[in-house]
Length: 230
Image 1 (cartoon, rainbow, N blue to C red):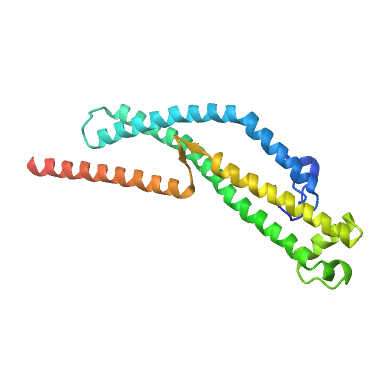
Image 2: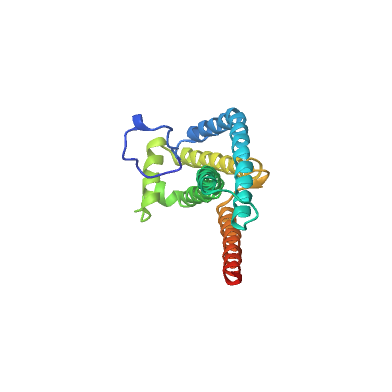
C-alpha cells in the first residue's frame, strides 16, 4: 500500500489501490477506507478472537494434560497418546498462525509510521529546496526527489501553487501519522488483553519448549531410576 516504486502488474489486478503520495485526495480516501474497515470489521474481529480464545483454552488443557502424561501423573494407552499428539500439533498450528499474523499486524504500525515519517521528511526537504528544484531547475542528484519533483511539476505550475500543494500533502501525511499512532495505542491486536508482538511470541515459544524440556528430563530421570531399582 505504501510503496512508491512502480508496480509491474496492471491496475486491474490490484485488490486495493496504491497510495499516490503526490495526490492528497488518496490520503483522504484511505483514511475513510481505514475507518470503514475498523467499524465494519470490529464485530467480525471480536467473533474471530472469541473463536480462537476457545481454541487457546483447549490447547492449554491439552498441553497440561500432555505434561501430566510425560510426568507419568496420567496413565493412557498408546492410541490416546497418538491422538493427543495430533490434536496438540493441529491446535498449535492454528494458534501459531493466528498469533503470528496478529504480531505482524502490530509490527506494521511501527513500519508504516517510520515510512510515513520518511516520506514527510522528503517533502519537507523538497519544500526547503523549492527554489533550486522549481525556480532555478538545477540538476537533482537524489533519484527519489527527481521523480517526485517531476510529478509535482505536472500537477502544478507556479511556485506559489507548488508551495501550497506540498504543504497540503504534508498536512495529510501528518493526519495519517496521527491516525496510525491512535490505532497503535487503542486498536492493536490483542488476545486476553495482551498486545501480541514478535518478541512476545519468541518468549512464549522459549517458555513452552523450556517447560516441555523440563517434563521430558523428569520423565527420563524417573525412568532411569526405575530401571536401576529393578
